Image 1 (tube, each protein chain N blue to C red):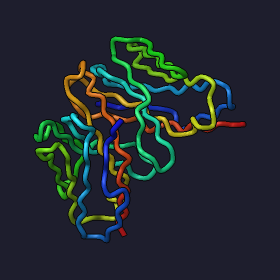
Image 2: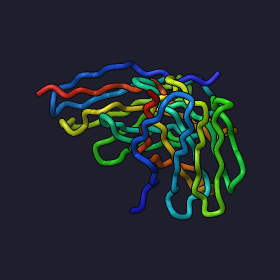
Image 3: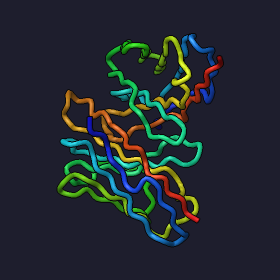
Amino acid sequence: GEDVEQSLFLSVREGDSSVINCTYTDSSSTYLYWYKQEPGAGLQLLTYIFSNMDMKQDQRLTVLLNKKDKHLSLRIADTQTGDSAIYFCAERGSSASKIIFGSGTRLSIRP
Amino acid sequence: AAGVIQSPRHLIKEKRETATLKCYPIPRHDTVYWYQQGPGQDPQFLISFYEKMQSDKGSIPDRFSAQQFSDYHSELNMSSLELGDSALYFCASSLSGTGGTDTQYFGPGTRLTVL
């Protein structure tokens, strides 16, 4: 079945890079997403990557996709306090419109 | 840029009551999705509509129903509310055929509390 897994917590020092990892099981996934959710707020789409790509960069964000290992990562360069949030990895299969979310990784920033 | 609008933002109901949540998609978007996020949980897909027809169905209880109207807005109707229905309900919208991404943009959510 479809499943998306992430580690629950990550703590980094301000200014360092954050790397959030995700694994998924659906080999038919066509799109993989990263969403950010701040406390009590909605889901903000950060970036997405098509399954035939292995890397996408957007300003401080770099997404790496290893389709063979079904592994997705989000790297945030120069992490700032405003990056504190829960980051959800999500995937969408080719035959469904729904998005399957991981459990979310809570990113906390140390001064 | 216009975003997905959801109303109300907060709703308090008692057990066995009914609730209606509304979603107004991004202009020109033709597909809407409903998700439920329980406390400390990841969002779970409920149902989606494309061009006013149900396109996919997830773990939506029989007590819930939804529809998409001719102006593409959608309503989620919830009856016989239970304490466990307390959650954040997200609506998302997308435009089909935009290079095949169908990227879903989420609204701010409606926080439903059932007492």
